[in-house]
Length: 360
Image (tube, rainbow, N blue to C red; front, side):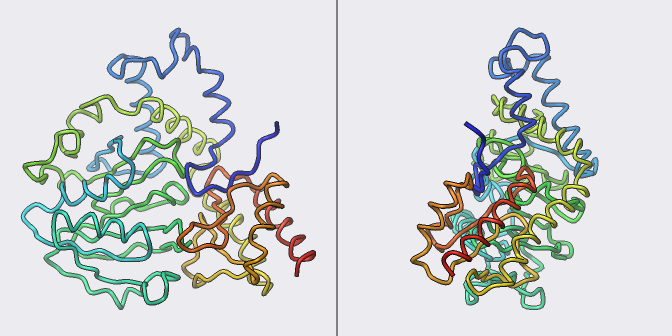
């Protein structure tokens, strides 16, 4: 069976080149006689895989030397708790920016450890925009400022980095990390679940500035302590080894595509194709403010909701899968992460035009 165009929000499409290489190396990695899944995480073979993955990620993002890269487990939702556990120190509050469901979940989890303040919110606008910076009310005594750079459900994305002064900036970058160049030095901490732009589910990447280590609450388990994990080079316990291997292959694939500047140009081109169509017709509608529209997750509705099911059914018949919007907002969502080829986006746009012709 031919591969479909998979528009799932995550776990999401992976580069075919990565999957083919993983298939070819499944039983015997580089003459070791073992699959990567069978290797000891402390053996020289896997140590070389982990070191290469970290080096390639550092190169892609130009991560400064005073930042640690951690490969952790638990997904981004675990980081909702681990961030306050590790960064609060003696502070009792942290600032959060509410732009949708994932930032709301982070706020809710932080309440277990402190009194989070909502410094800005787009809830009144039904999370269809990024709150204008002038509306933010930041506390200079907050332990950190947290935001979600891309809300996968609503399709809202920051295209700028907030300036928070001396207060460390923390970002959940799960769904747009590696989609464009990034000035890591603007952040105190970045975390990202892997299953959008990095690799399979089960791995979380954490990039943390050195001076923020060593602040963990006394009750923090060692495997959740950033400092302990950094000192153990992410090997304090058995890490998600196969997911790290696939992430490493993805990093090399990105380098082969020309790096993040090249992948950003492609992402801009892909997103523009869909948004151009959405703006040319009343049959489809995108609710997100134009300057805040996500390049990764394009949320849209049909003028007549009765056509939703026929749209999804016919799209699937054309090999266009996982276009149903999140249950909390309905409608449609096309997730076009790095690994979604331009051909897939063109096929989607052609289908949408034809569907409108027949049903409009």
